[in-house]
Length: 196
Image (cartoon, rainbow, N blue to C red; front, side, top):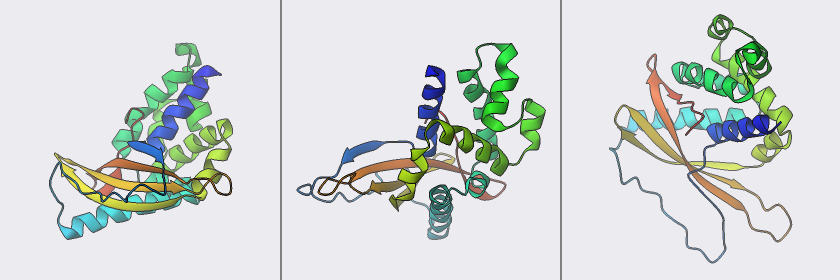
């Protein structure tokens, strides 16, 4: 059970990886986000990057995991399969059942035959069994895409996620995150990583 909890934590970070998290305070000044590292993107590319990330986050909020999965970079998703399976498979004899539990199939060939949407839907179903409240919490969030910067062959896109106060009179929870993206088959896609 500990391994499953650890996997859930790691996977939730890969869906919404935290870079900076703190409760917002009324007496704090608003922070303007301006990229200091990397280079600016041409306006058309920045618009495409922000749209892909916005569509991905909106699909997560609506629990449309098939759509969200189709916006993930395929090579990075496939590269994450073995490390995720290893977190709950105690040895090679439990690898197939562990893979089936997370991804709905038990062999690497079957993994490769499934679409990103199918793989991600299975993964999210596994995660939501361990933490059924996560989807409800995310559905209440407001998300604002802030800035995009190119760093090498990747783009880092900052966004702010804000959750309403848990109780009346409480403070909202705010998190600013940078999501890595790259082009795959000519389209901007989310880079999936369990160690982001």
